[in-house]
Image (cartoon, rainbow over the protein chains, first blue to last red):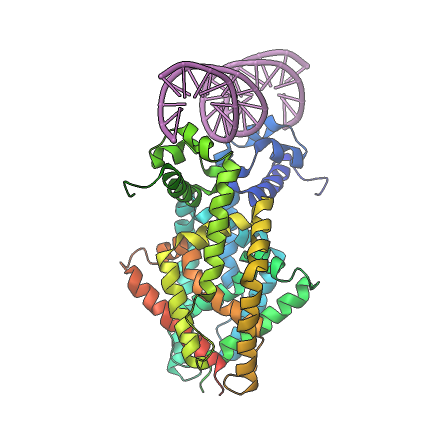
Length: 207
Length: 207
DNA sequence: GTCTATAACCGGATAGAC
DNA sequence: GTCTATCCGGTTATAGAC
């Protein structure tokens, strides 16, 4: 934690941590205050309630999470094989640097907090819808030109997303599977990238 | 709710519902009692604490969840293509009938409740480890005999699991994506099965 | 902007009558 | 086995001094 962080930033950082670890219902305001190194009352000086604080964290997280699917540099002109490989590697690298994102989001989207749906909807309307459409076009065109086999574009996007996210969503289970063997996280992720790329390329490229 | 359910069964059923909807931290004992149609004190007559009640629900759920990966009838003698197709269809059908399972489990495995790890470990030790090993062998043998391409067995299992689970884990997001178009759940799952089977078969069978 | 003290409430758990 | 009443600790949130 940087010493020149403002109080507001310290609170946000601590809140992010605690909400990720404990979830909304398990999070405690006093713990957030303690981790931020500020007085509990200060949180209420900056945020009107636990709900308000959570909403700002969730909004930021959902946005980052969705954006991560589409942060590739200039995909338009790449050929399909390179594009697929680049995407899988970039996406998993991003998730490895932000493992808290899938964790938090998947926990909260199944709750009954209406804020969640509002924010997902906002993200979608803002620009996500357009970008997805762009990807869909890309896949459809590649199908049409014979660069890849003919496939359902949306289902294909979901398949790749599912495989990329799996490691981060299932981490606690995976840890148990590998309990005996001391396996390096980086090594595991490298294998993961290879396996996904391998399956997707062989599954999509023409036979 | 069957009228001849015992009190214990009514409590379990209600607890399962509430824990799934709200998560452990969000669940309230009085709500469980209300849904079960019994007095709150009765819960404590049968279960020593919220923790104890939760543990019994979680144990049962994790067991069902893990078992669902391996409930296929007599896989040993099937050829690879049929086996893969049968597995994907059976697994998604199971999840469609028990959509609460992935929801609940993924929410709780990221918590700090040590019971979770204990139970995962128990499931694994009990028989899961052996069954996974059997599947691993099956895949390795199929690779060796040229029935499928040479692939990493564990990574492949995870890839299929990831794609099967995705729809159920991401349901709230998927709903937003399809908000406008009224799409039938069954139709969606049929597409899902086709897309996964298609990708996996084309990705695994020799070129 | 920051702190202390405290209000107001809620939820898990128990005592004890029936 | 079932119910009522209640305790007790903890949690969000605010009042008010500095």
